[in-house]
Length: 131
Image (cartoon, rainbow, N blue to C red; front, top):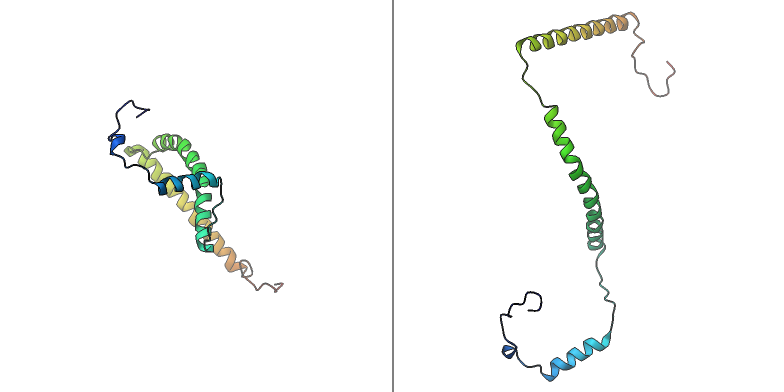
C-alpha cells in the first residue's frame, strides 16, 4: 500500500488475468469520454429530494447559530435559576402579591360599576351598525 507502507492483504498473483472481454470493456469505457446521465423521476420524488437539499443548507445555517448561542443560553439559565427564599423574602413577596391582587379586584369592581351605569360601554354591535 503506497499510503501506509503496509503490504496488501493479497498478492498480485492471486488475481485472475484480464480476459479479452475485460480489455474490450475497459477500452470502450475509456474512449467514451464524458457523458450526461438523465434520470426520470416523479414530481413527488423531485420535491422530496429538493426539500432535503434545501434542508441541508438551513440545517447548517440554523445549527451553527444554535451551537454558538447555546453556551450563552446555558449561562443565563444558570444565572436566572429559581432560588430558595428565606421566610422574610417569602413574606415580602406574599404581601406585595396580595396588594397587587387587591388593586386588580378594585379596578374590576370600578369597571363593573361603570358598565352598570352606562350599558352602551363595551357593547358589541354588528359590522355595519353605527350604534
